[in-house]
Length: 494
Image (cartoon, rainbow, N blue to C red; front, side):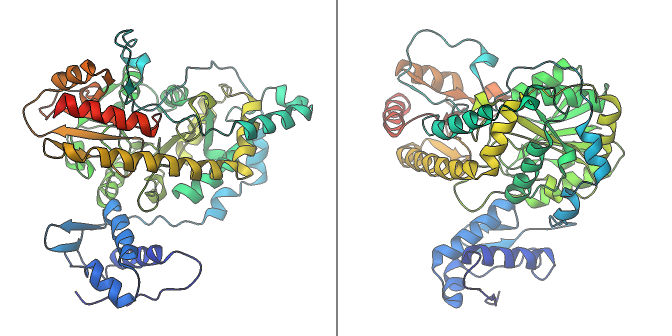
C-alpha cells in the first residue's frame, strides 16, 4: 500500500476527522478494495506531517464502524464492503413539512394511558426486589446514571419561566404525537448527532419505551414473528411476549446479529441495538448493517426496530451513525430516550416511523393521546433548543469518561483471569472468566465482600454455552467507590 494523498484543510473539521472521512469515502467508492492493506499509523502520520495520535483516532473510528480490521502483527486491512448504503440525504426536504401536513398534525386528540418508564438495561423491578442484606458497599449497576451532574438550576429556571407565562394552552390536550415544536427540535437533534433522516411528522413522543412498544404493536398488528439477539434487553423481550408475538432468537458474533442465521427464521421484524448492543457492548459493523437492510428489503412488511438507547456516550472517536441513517427504503423504526442522557424521571422517549407505518398509525391509532405532559414537553424542548442539553452532555461525557478510564486502570490486574470487553462506550463493561469458574461462584464471592455485580445470564433469552461473564456498571459511582469496589473484587476473584 502506497502512502495516501489526503488534502488536509486548516480550520473547520479536526484533522483526524478529515483523515477518517477521506478513507471512508475511498472505501465506499471502491478505490480502496477489500483486503487491501492500509499504511501503518506511524507511516501515514509521517507522510501527512501530523501527530500519530491523530491517525490513531481516525483508524479507531474506522475500526469501530467496520470499514477496516486490524490483523495482529500485520497491520490494517479494508473489510469486505458490498452494497453499502449511503447515509447522506437531503435533510431540508425531509424536515420541511408542507402546510397540509402541519395542519393535519396540529388537530385531533384522543385518550391513552400513561405507562411506567422503561429504563434501558437490567433493573431491580425486573428481576425482583433487592435483598435487604447484605448492605452493599458498592453496587456496579449497569442501569444507574450519575444524577449529581444534573443541571437543577437550569431546569428550575426554565420551569419557572414557562409557568409564569400563564399560557393556558399548556393545560389543554395536545397533539397525539406530541407537541410539534418538541418533535421539530428532536428531529434536528437526531439529524445532527445521529444522522437520522426524518421529518417532525414521523416522530411520536411517549412516556418511556414501554408505551411506544405497546403503540407499535397496534401499528404492526398481531401475528408478528419477531427476532431478537441473544443476549438482549430482557425488558423488551418481556413486552413482546405480552403481545403474544412469536419470538425467535438469533446468534451474534463480534460484528452483531448474524444475518445468515436470521434468514432461516422467517421473521417479520428484527429488534437490534446496533450502535451499542445491550448487554454485550458490541458495535454492529457497517457490512452487517448493510446485510440487515438487504434482508428487510427482501420481502414486503419487513422492519427493523433500532433501539438507540445510549448512543450519546462514546469515549473514543465520534458517535457511530444510526442504522436508520442508512435506510433508503423506509424499513427502520428508530427508537430513542432521554432517560440515560438526562434523567430517568424525565420519562420522555421517541419513535421515528417510516412513511408507510406513519400512514397506518394515522389510520388506526390516531385516537391514542400523548402520554407526556405538555409542560414537560415544553421544558424539554427549551432545554434542548437553547443549548443546555448539549452543554450537559459534554459535561457528563467528561465525567463518565474519567470513571470509565479509572475502571479500566483498576481492572488491569484481572487480565490474566478475565477478558475485558464492551469498553469505549456506554456506562458498563464486561469481564469474562478465562477458566471454568461459574457465574454463580463469581456472584457469591463478590457478595461476601458486599459488592453487587450482575451476571450476563440475566439477559439471556435462551441458554447458551459460554464462559461466566459479569457486567460492571460505573455510571452512578464516584471514583472512591470504583476504587474500593474493584479492590474488594480483587480479593474475591483473584
